Length: 273
Image (cartoon, rainbow, N blue to C red; front, side, top):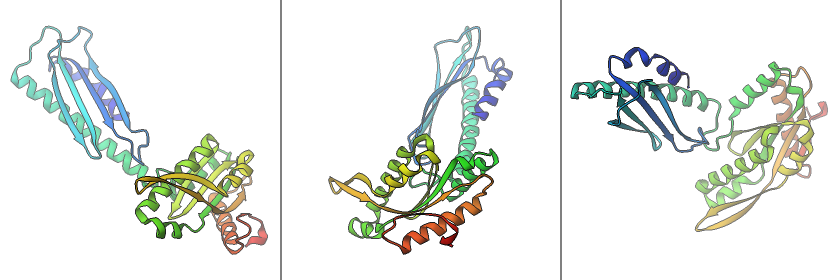
């Protein structure tokens, strides 16, 4: 957005010399774990108050992942572009595309540092960063933290294969995230381990939910039903707590849950250590 804004603000400086009447760009990108909503938007980078001719130059660029960026350029009202003028316009849009591409790549790389690319949830870095932000805002004590380990998931992988196991993990992540909604933050720490920060008033509900999550996944031409159970370590975050302490507490609690299979959710107390 910042790059587009800068380009748009500076277009009047060159538009007159190029007899440019209007420049429109259409960004399209399919959904992906790093960009779950994808992108499909049209931006008018420049429009002359005098209007524009109907003749246009159309240039389209294909991006990685099946995306497209297309440009429509029109001469200012009353102008007719020569072949040299058209070459200048094409040179301009290629440079704009390159600038937008670099900015988008930078944003994706930055996001990938805090995102689990398989599920689209936050990764461990994103989880800790979110907790640090809440702590800095003085709101972290409004949440409880949970560390979940999916039970017997290796068995599921053995039964259906790693490829479909990944599909099950993604569906579980989507179901978990949708159930939490705006009341918290879900992350995948890696493998079959997840962690969440959830508003205290929904903590009991979430603990009950993760005890048995029902999901349906397409498999071998049909739909397979799975009941995913999790062990959980829970910590009631206190005012002034920092994320290293929170992570230690939920890690200790989930380890205790592993040692006591009849108690799938363990709330941290000092005795757990």
